[in-house]
Amino acid sequence: ELGYSDQNGDGYLDTVNGPLAITLAVVNERANPVRLEAAEYIQKDLKKIGIRVDIVAQDINTFKNTVKNRNYDMVLSGYYLTDTPNLNFILKAGGNGNLSGYSSQNANDCLYNIDAASTLPALKDAVVNLQKTVASELPQIGLFFEMNTLLYSNKINVGAVLRETQVYSTINEWYFTA
Image (cartoon, rainbow, N blue to C red):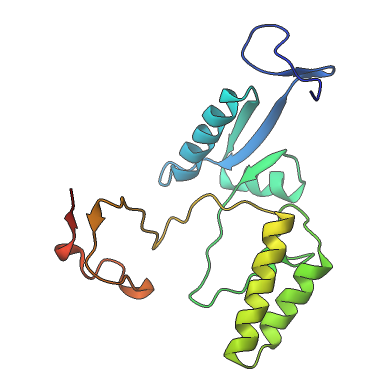
């Protein structure tokens, strides 16, 4: 419908200008291969729908220059957030972690309202509004959280409510259900 078809039988879609391909910049660290592995999963998934992904695995300094110069189609990066995360650096126009150059007055207003909230209800309202704004504008897509994330099957009974600061405190009581 959009003019894409596999014209040469290689399994990838082609356009009038050539193959439908994107570059995915990622840091390649031997000590932490998670991002490179995630990039390979992205590559496999997009191949299923005919999009070629060329992974550009780089050392940290080259990656920083690639990001600074915006020399990529997609970038797979990570952020480290504190227990009281401030998202201004990611979502605010001009933020040093705003890799896509995202700029939204709505998001900036929401971030301001979060910072200015003096009551819990005001904070909750401001955060909900930010969530709605980000969900509708999709400046970034979060793929996974490496720390304090727990994925489990509904066949595992954890036996208690999990708390952020004590995720595994009852692990000795967990069991599989039929």
